[in-house]
Image 1 (cartoon, rainbow, N blue to C red):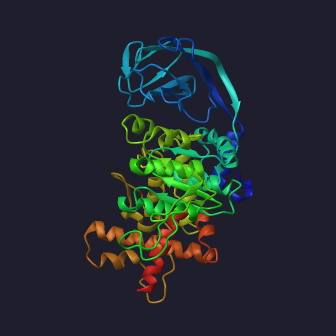
Image 2: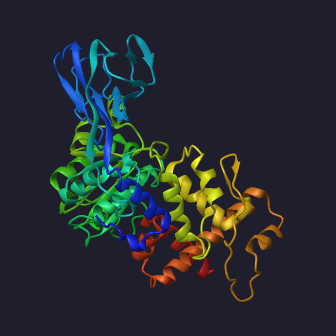
Image 3: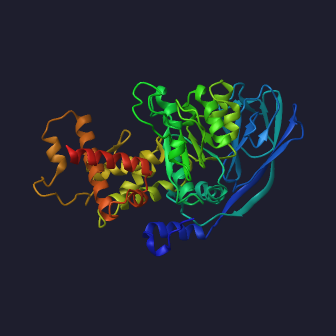
Length: 464
């Protein structure tokens, strides 16, 4: 794990870590769920304060407490310790989750309650008070940042997964950092010197997905004017992230399963099989168990991919991480002598962040670029000082004034200002790192693919 030495951290981060050093443990009660009636009487699962994720209950083999009850959903509910209480969250189950006979979407339990799901009843037992389990003092795993207990619970698991070289399913809401985690798993693992390739299932037209995955031979279809390798061959010796795999057409899932199981691919229009040595990571915002139940995702592919799984928590459940992340983003994007204003941190901390870390990153970027034109949702952020830059020769001192003088509609004006900021930011970071996109992306704290998109846009602008 690439922990930074304390002298390289800003004062606020040092303060956060010193405060956590005084309580370097997850503290709370331990609980046990035990099946009291139904097909699985006697089955039980324990939930600890330091567990690296939520405990899942349902029919799916991916659940920690797997039940045979036909009336239970594949992924029925989740349980996690929050302080001295157990939080139960219904996962949009078909027949609902009930606490002492009352249907719930989310509930906090003390112990002694009975959970009803399908034809089964589970009792909740509090096992111990004030259990203390040591947590890592790390503030990051690779470029995945966070000092909250929710994130520090995950880092040891991330270390193990990085070294394991097995398929991993990364789950989480949009914007939680799934791609950054995947890239960090690659960079911290034995394949770090190999390529890291991303295939986004939502970014390729359906009729070209097979070719993009496995490649094609010349003349295999209209427009195939030359032989082309697919992403499996491009990732040979390294890691392939299949992003938003829940959106992959079910007709191609069997071919993907074969490629993963046999480590070989066949190009479209080809006759020979090509051996590949690739670690596959899959990311999804969808509940794949629900997709399997609905017939949109193959059960065998899901379990071949889910040798290991990790769920990134939403930002709203990462207590204390908003100020920490905002400071990191600000320090990377703003002028070195322009600290983030305390009143801005307060406003950021009070927002719900439905778009998670990505939304927070974009909000800070907009604020650096736009000043008082920036907003977070419906909340206008306060004015910032020192977010300007030295103009290029022949440029106006204020790019905002230049764009405003064009009398564009507000959405187009804002889009141009943000695009200008992104372009100049990429230019500055690339210059600082000698044109190396990999090192520049690491220093920026954003996924390499996002950085490359902006870099390509910059090159296109320079060529016109």
